[in-house]
Image 1 (spheres, rainbow, N blue to C red):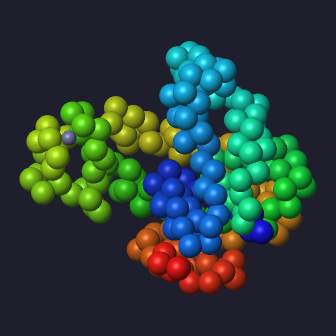
Image 2: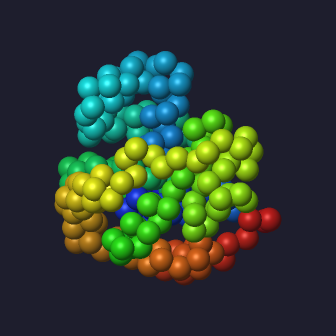
Length: 217
Ligand SMILES: [Zn+2]
């Protein structure tokens, strides 16, 4: 059984790295963001609470996040383990989580702020079909146009330098106590996330003592 937490700032590739890690090791990727979307789409009681918080322009509360995660883990479909992303949110949750689930390691993806800015500010969205683009990694074939439906691409409203700076501040403030606690418990594995996707994955596996990435196995 392998149980990991993955942490990292927006744009650090948490989703991609988690998916790769889960692919051949049969781990379950538990993403709080995906869980929220699922609850909202399926009109559950939790989904209604999430929607209410979002409508009021508030961040979804730590307690609500905790119940969503607990509900997911209680399904016990993770026979070989899991990679959890978006939890814990505070020191108390981190302590509780480590003790109750006997976490094997915390992957901390590190990315300098200027690289985060470069990655996030190059994101584009097609308002027609919802396809995501990135001017660094996933450029559209025709500049400024969606490959699928031809609609002019736009920048997300909250992908401005100012909004990003505010999100980064908020992220560091919120995650500092969690990172400090994990560091004290010596479960943190820092991995530099500024290189190619495969190289980051190799770094994660090396520090965790896992077999090399082999999606075909
Ligand atoms: Zn499109």
